[in-house]
Image 1 (spheres, rainbow, N blue to C red):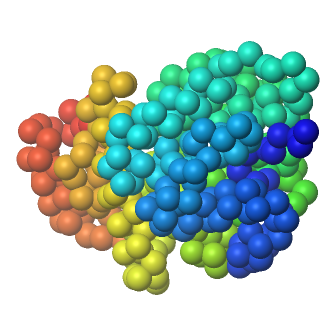
Image 2: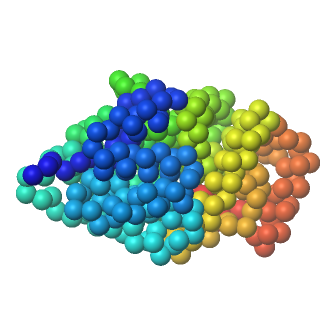
Length: 335
């Protein structure tokens, strides 16, 4: 009997930026190569093609293929506005993560099931089926690429708890300790540092890590993760990409709108929150900074726009949200 595959083989594989297609082609196992190709499509922002490629594995007998199929289809479905399928796939991942280990199951595979069970919750800003401490205790058994992604999830969980310094520290430690080159997982970690530093109002450090994430992503067109983090990056996408990379910027913003719409359709009702879904990306970024205590002048300097533009964007956001003052923004923003 063949040994179960580990999920998300592309994330597990070390390759240099710009060599993603060669990494996909390197897998001899046709099912593993097919899942790796679906991963590549997803991280390139091709949600429909990724969903089509991964759907065949939703009920696979092999747990690694099944986890991969459900993770890819679950998150691709958010961008496709297939909310029922997203819920089904993400629910299947949480169930896998919570299930008891099978007899003889390897520790890396058990840790992988917990990893993606955690991902389904953390990335939607929803509770996970087990504590982060439980998850952290087994994460060391993961292969390096998945271990780096696990470190990102733990950092993101700290961010959601308001411990922005811990978020930055955990991501930084993982990047310092890594041995191979894992552009997908490293991008997640640099974005984690960027959003943590932005919340700490250390925008120069935040920009440095965003630019590192961009340098890892752009050679292979891996725009999805950048777009998914837009709101948490609090204006960094506009500041770093809009003038210098206008075509790439447009692609990232397109991904942001598609993914965010689906994300909110699950997050808002499940969390009992009202994260805004009717603001432009610039209005949302300005509002995120404003509710974090940034002055109009600070926002203007950070985003490279005038203070008058900041004021106009905030006024537009207030009107759309039906509020009248800055202090009311918080309940409509990401935590």
